[in-house]
Image (cartoon, rainbow, N blue to C red; front, side, top):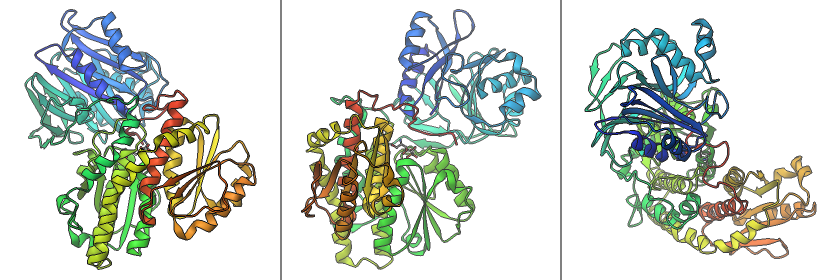
Length: 606
Ligand code: AGP
């Protein structure tokens, strides 16, 4: 997703802008650019190109720019393809700007105000630059407000005006902007990561508030142009990335970090066999009173909910709705004040999840966010937040965030079981003990990653693959399938084993490898017979099998025995194995594992 940076200082800014853009690379992008008020030429200079930030850095080396005030951008293409012309910043007349979001009515604006003659790109953003330029009367805030009133859609706009060379202006609707004082000046960005550890607190720019970045002051103006005092959030976590270490890709590093990070996530929530959410401030009464639970999330985060719904059914004897956040607002959901909505998100910035959460709260729901990035938009929108301690997750494919979110979810449901009188003291203790075992069980899988690497080689030539399982195994495989397809580009479908024969088994041939999971005691026999069904159609089968479950009579191409845990907890070791499988297929295919094609780490457009 697009990344934005603005920086004005008493020293040259170009290096800091480029460094900050690199810190935003994890969001996913396909072109990059910057604009500075150049102190030599005394005009705004733009440098931009399709490609990586490193390409932009080379361009700035060849065509040097020097300035004390500038903006930068990494673009994830929405309107208009990947090209130098479509890269940001866009400059029209005396206005230069970058944008994160989608302007839905940009064509109408272009036609209504006759802006086509000023445009060189296919982007909605350049239309906004032309609109602001056409309105400009020498008063930036007045002009910005007039232009913003014309816009429909989401935006974080960061703007420079030629006749205000030391000031950066910004305004947002939904798409995030944070601002902060740093030692040499002031800065704004799409998220805290871009500050690069230069600040210990930051401001979240309120929607439709105009922020002015001066070298020694950050000024906020509300819609009536009244100065408002900023609200500060402390940066009490490590925002710096400690690099890949000895790993070739962040994805492998983050898979290997899971045991330690899950220990951190569970610390303070499990003490002496007790499950407590005191550190999160989640009131027991909320957990006792809610009559419905509904998860809103996307992608991997949504799969936490899928697996979690099995847990809720088996532990709380409740049904839990798990909804695609992007669908939620359009499905007339049954939500009221007795509904507890769980917004699950690694980044805390996924716009679909944010908007779904806002919608549910408008309908009266109470909410808990299960979030990895502190102070993020979804965290701020939630009534309560359970932060995971996975640390920065850089690879686009989510791995440690998933298992950490699962761990937090299990703690939440465990606490609910205690509060609702479902767990007695012994059951709570046993559940807590099993949860504390998770890191070690995952470690056992990680220690055998060479076996998984060997299995991965059997998938390298596949174009299609299937993952089959029943019950919780099916939920586990939904995430396993997403992992494999998003980093290896093998079209992978997870299927409830018993459902396969109702049509999809027509696609099973010797060309379609099948990965089966059998971790649930009570489903063993049925799952094994489904395996035989695909084998009889020629499919090779890799079986992920809980080590204490007998597989007599089953002859699979590979059997990877998973360390034993009670059935309810098997999602953890199984997911670690599936993450490694996806990783090795992708890396052995020579793909850019951390930055798969077309994908963004944070999806801030609907
Ligand atoms: C998962 O590997 C993907 N990167 C993607 O599905 C991701 O989980 C989804 O976009 C949700 O992101 P979030 O957790 O930051 O909200």
